[in-house]
Image (cartoon, rainbow, N blue to C red; front, side):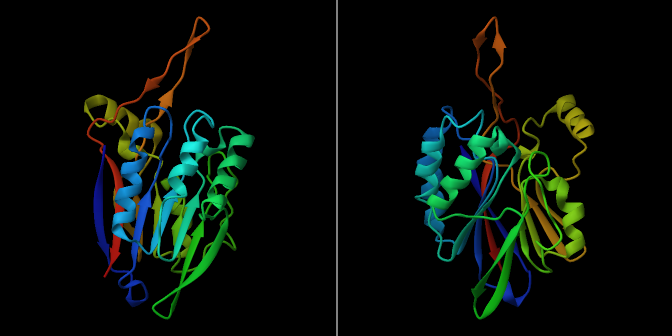
Length: 247
C-alpha cells in the first residue's frame, strides 16, 4: 500500500493556492494491478489542479499496457496532466512508443524535452520535462526556462537542471532506496552514487523533490529455461503519492 505525503512550499505569489499531485514509478505489473483503483481514488479525491507522473510506468515490457490506460484515463485534474519518461519505459522501442500513445489517449501531455505554459490566477506558469538520461536523449538548452516546474525521472539530473534556475524539479527513480536496512542500504548509497534518494532538497532558490514511487521492480530471471518472477520488497521505504500545496 502507499501513503499520501503532503508538502507545503512557498515558490512565490504566482504559485499561491496551486495544488499539484505527483506519482512516480508505477511499474505496473500483475503483482500490483490491484492497487490501481486505490491510486485513482486517492488522486481524484484531492481535486488537484495539476497531476504529474515522473516516469517508469511499466515493468518488464508491455504486459500491462491496458491496465496503464485504465488508470491514466480515469485520473482527473482541473488544469492539466503532465508526464515524463523513465528508464523502464524504454524497455524496447515498441513499448516506449505505446506508452507515449497511451499517455496521449489519456489526455496526459508528455513533456519530452519540451515545455508548456499554463495560466493560473492571471500568471503564466511554465512546466517542462526532460527525457530520461539513462535510456533517452535529454535536451536541456531551449527546453527549461527560469522558474519552471521541471519533470525529470532521474534526480541525478538536478545538478545540470539547477543551472537553469527552476522553481522546482520533480523526480522519482530511486524508490527512496527501496531497501533501507543495515549494510545493504549503505552499500547501495555508496555504489549507486546518488546524492538525492528521497524527499525535499534545496539548491540556491530552487527545490528538488524525489518521490519514493508507488510500485516495485519485478525481476524475471531464467533458470534452466524457466522464468521466475522476483518482486523486490520495500523495507523502510513506503510507497507514496505526493500532494504539493503552494503557500
